[in-house]
Image (cartoon, rainbow, N blue to C red; front, side, top):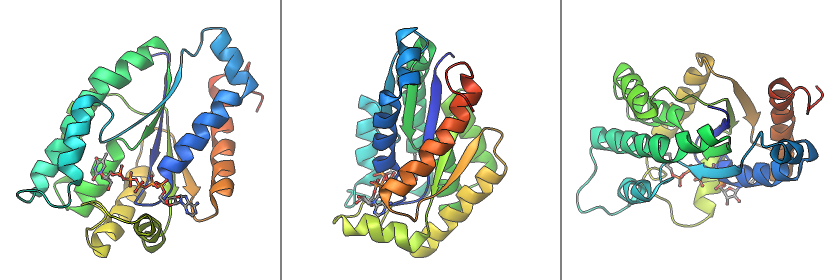
Length: 227
Ligand code: T5A
């Protein structure tokens, strides 16, 4: 793989989607990034998400987030649908672009399944680990940015937007377990993780993310980014 997979993770309303778009705009405007593009070291900088990064994934996303399904989704069905979405995304979207040299900014990845289905739904963590292995085909992120915010604050932001989806409607206890799950997963992660305090206003959070990115960019591309 010659590109970079940069993942944004966290609970509801942490501001991942907002920050992914700020990050995308900021990266595209950096002179050092433009040089890397001119030299052909980066082909493209693109944004995607899970669930729903592919056409098949968009259909799976509808099944997962529908608030009034014809029949309730069981927890195991939910787990398998997230895994199917990821397998499709990895094979048909992420791997080909990474192989071509793209930087991919991805809204959620495998840690979400451990946090939500493992800790939130309390499904077997070893089974989830195996499923993640199958779904990712071993593809891990080059950098994960964990936007951490207290559960009540994040849910409050998500609910202030209006309608909530099926996952947002889960109990407060569920979302507390999810936050605990992220903290456990990232404490044991074998890939780089930067914890970002997402309590501040959007611009301050964006600055924290940019500072974290610059630390990694100067490791990855020392000739283009001075540390
Ligand atoms: N899921 C996903 C699993 O259960 N297992 C899995 O394996 C995977 C991959 C996805 C759902 O699926 C679950 C997790 C999710 O429940 P989604 O719609 O993609 O559904 O949900 P989220 O990823 O949670 O997206 P949200 O849009 O709800 O949250 P974001 O992206 O963290 O937050 P964002 O940027 O949309 O902001 C939310 C609101 O807060 C405001 C924004 O303007 C917006 O109104 N905001 C701020 N307000 C104050 N201060 C800040 N710093 C703010 N930043 C944003």
